[in-house]
Amino acid sequence: MALKSEIRGDVLVIRAEQARIDAAGAIRFKEAMRDVAATPVPRVILDLSQVSFLDSSGLGAVVAVMKHLAPARRLELAGLTPTVEKVFRLTRMDSVFTIHPSLDQGLGHVGE
Image 1 (cartoon, rainbow, N blue to C red):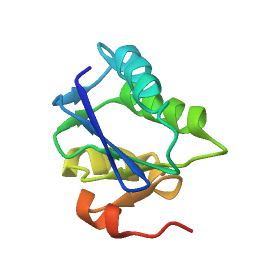
Image 2: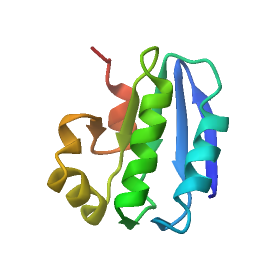
Image 3: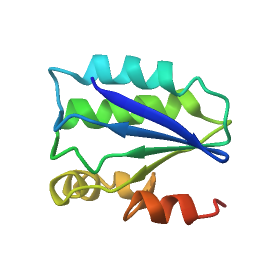
């Protein structure tokens, strides 16, 4: 899974640079996210703006990363495409994650 990360102030921004997070790549995604998220910063934002497809395995991998970071840090999401946003809405995971319309809005957001 292609991920790109950078630190912006007290935020670790991770960009998923692949169009799909599905059963074929969910385990690689989860492992790569755990490696990248090891950087000790207070906030982690996963930018999904390039992901056009997410299946249940992909969703499970995102949830696993969220649990891996907890309770010290929360995984925030940004830039969900309409198809990916629908998956989060239909599974009601949109009530579990902090979801920002865009990465810029997420970076401007001050967490609870």
